[in-house]
Image 1 (cartoon, helix red, strand yellow):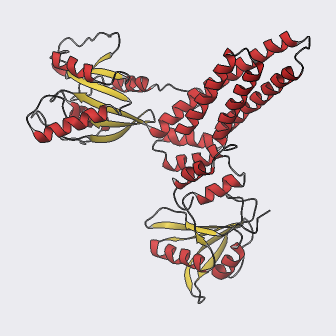
Image 2 (cartoon, rainbow, N blue to C red; image 1 turned 180 degrees about the vertical axis):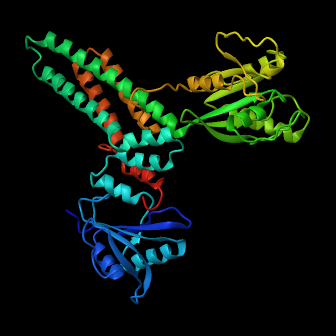
Image 3 (cartoon, rainbow, N blue to C red; image 1 turned 180 degrees about the horizontal axis):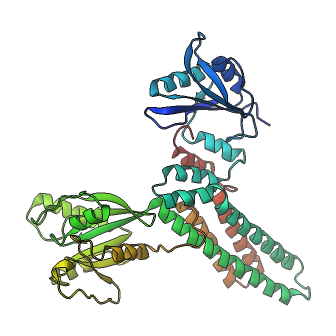
Length: 446
């Protein structure tokens, strides 16, 4: 039932610029007033109606299709009217202004989807996946977002929560009746159930990590001495001349970024200034930026000249790299060598490539995915955000603590905290300021 306090919002739901079709979306309790003012009538529910869109004087602004979805069978759960006209920016703005004159207000970013969440049409994880689907950079990311939007991620989380609730009921019963003869049996059952929950949680966390990688991508920083072929390798990986290539050392003086994808996983490849001592003030600024960029890298690709091998200067570069960041040692220019074999180090992976011919690049791509922690997930992955990962890891921590406790009261409390952490993912326990932050990142009209 639509609340009488639900105000009416309106926004352009299609992207900026000119197109064949443009859509105005209106949602709220005054849909009939807006429809009467623009269309002269309220369209038949869930039926496409060809109409003229009228201004305040009854003159035609545009012509197109009107669709009316009464509560609760709409995207937001409130009454919704969509006006599909021509996709010119001027005519859409005129039509939107007419909606505002009739009592609607301009929707805030993400407000339509926020209403869908508040009206229980979507849970929070599904609502976030709407934005992820729109912003997906690869087909793999889009499929992952669609899995979350269709409720697979939420279903998995709800399943875990249900099992936690059952386990909590068992533990609470044990606390209420501590002298029962079946206590030993119940303890074994308790531990078995907890172990099952932990295994399922670990599987969901691994899938979510893969989805987070699809959503955010990874920063791969190419570092090394001048003239080892960093810019050439960036160009070869991206398939275009993104960076200037020259035989003159120190040509690259600033950070150059290019996005690529490997098997649907987005990677932000970053070419940096060659690391060396220089008297050139501008080059030194570029080298300083290189060091700063290295500390934000997810993977560092250290490029070396295969003809020179691992030199003292290369070893100095390796020693200065962040110790906890995965790295690949890549020997470039193997097309100029007879012996192209490279051994595996204890810590670093050694690869040979030719940025000029493309030799060894496929193995490099696979090694980059492995270094990022990517692996093919059976059944696909869930699109996940950083807050989802934090909640899953927090739940995992509480379950681990529970497994180490002998006190039944503390065991029960850890289960409660784990359940609360998981429930934050779907929005059952969510602060209003978090909701504001999440939906403010949506586009207007969605």
